[in-house]
Image (tube, rainbow, N blue to C red; front, side, top):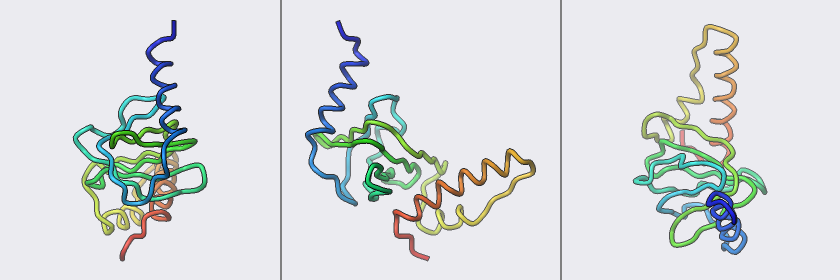
Length: 137
């Protein structure tokens, strides 16, 4: 007998395999990822931002607080977004706009080597977001 986790994974793989293409600005009720629990609250809808590359697509919550990417496959069924693997994930801790994202990309304070490394990781994530989402200055 297969465990519920494996059955769930197989179902998600099947949905992703049969799903039609997802386009920028498509909206979904929620996101379900094969290997992990929910990364965005269910009460927030999900919006497709666009492709990061051939194997990764960027999404955000409707309020702009959460940005994340799905890798290796994604699909939709009944208005729900399904993904195989999560790539980048960033929680701004507050709703964002284009200006908020740009200001977050430009500022950084750190007092230690580890703080500098954390800032560089955050900066790379924000630059990826900025490369996919056309931000207005």
